Image (cartoon, rainbow, N blue to C red; front, side):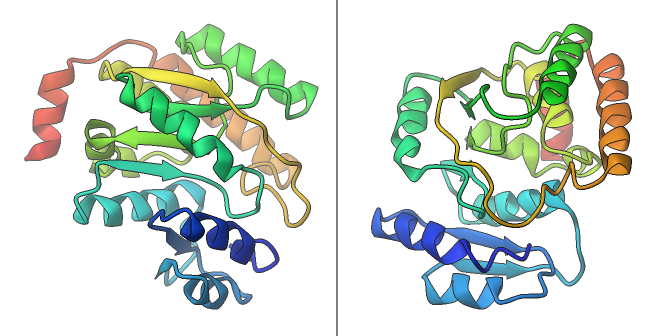
Length: 223
């Protein structure tokens, strides 16, 4: 959403490396969609603002329809480095279902405290919970396009718990991330949004901490 200052650079670099790029324009009010198309991306335009996770899910669903083996999600603001993509792909090739590009040096002290609290409550063995730089394989994609995943607000704690509880193998690889140079966070844009995120993720951490039966759940998704 409103990433016209960075989207062209991000997409051009990916296209040069022969990646197929899908951009979900979350009802932006600037030139993001037009620039993305010009640079060679497939652009999906939301008719209203759906938020970060549901927009990401829309892109994953489109890739699922294209029968993609792997989907990698990344931010349009230039924080993520496409030079780290091969490292993530290598981890997937070694048997990971989900690969997270992890940069634990970023973020405020408060964010790190929240990460530790959530991990204590839910037992996730993931250090960078809020990283949107992720690789999903076919099985993970199948889970993320489900109606159950649509009910979640964010792609961090809830999605990770869903994938963990279905026994998918989640690994982290270290990456470097740039500081945001323009725009604001889609989650931490005000104190109200921060408190809502903390309450929502804390509740999920408590209620979703126990594993579910993987194959019964996947069978429901398929039907």
